[in-house]
Image 1 (tube, rainbow, N blue to C red):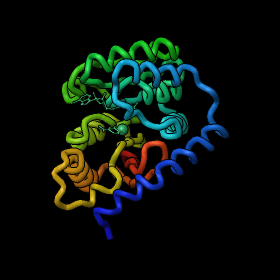
Image 2 (cartoon, rainbow, N blue to C red):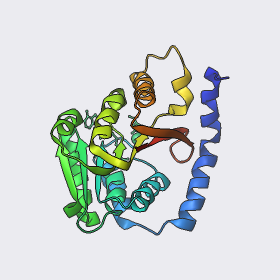
Image 3 (cartoon, rainbow, N blue to C red):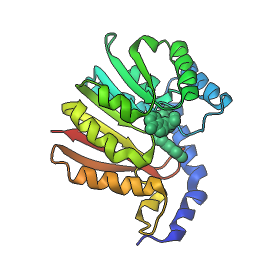
Image 4 (cartoon, rainbow, N blue to C red):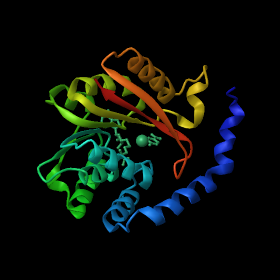
Length: 228
Ligand code: SAH
Ligand code: DHB
Ligand code: MG
């Protein structure tokens, strides 16, 4: 059963989770100056350190590649770390449309795209994702939802419209160190996750599951949905 004290588990084992991430990164990831620089310039620009981890970024990249994705939708750019991973999964005529509300985040991301040599593949839309989604035309092959957690259910419903049958939708941060099981939570990200879960459960056009993760970013997880 969930107990409030379970949240402490993360604090005790985080160094181990990060060390295991580091072990596998050393084995499986090539050195990557463009991604390291994107991380460094995001920090220098005062952006919060909430990008996906390197293994999660590469996981998104491999999943998009395996799906043969040519058109990818991302909601929540930040400094473009996950966007660069996704852009690298594309053929030379592919496209990532990525939505970011904060002009400063978008400016840092745009510079990171140029340095990584992927700017021609990326259409960065600055403004509330809700407004961008309302004017976007599908179909997309793959979508990654990673913006304000209170709106996750709305973004999910938009992605079901925009992603083609057989396409994939990933939603980040759906476990939140287990705090989603706190029935009295007033955290808007937790309440947003409940709304998201209800929206997915009520959507007959997708088949979905959750994958919990630990690693450099403690205990969290993502939903994977395939549009039928
Ligand atoms: N996907 C990124 C991390 C995104 S962090 C990565 O892994 O590298 C979440 C981002 O969503 C932040 O930059 C935040 O400014 C943006 N965001 C928050 N609310 C938004 C909204 N309503 N529309 C678009 N972007 C939003
Ligand atoms: C936060 C947002 C994220 O997308 C994430 O992966 C981790 C944390 C946040 O807003 O705190
Ligand atoms: Mg996230």
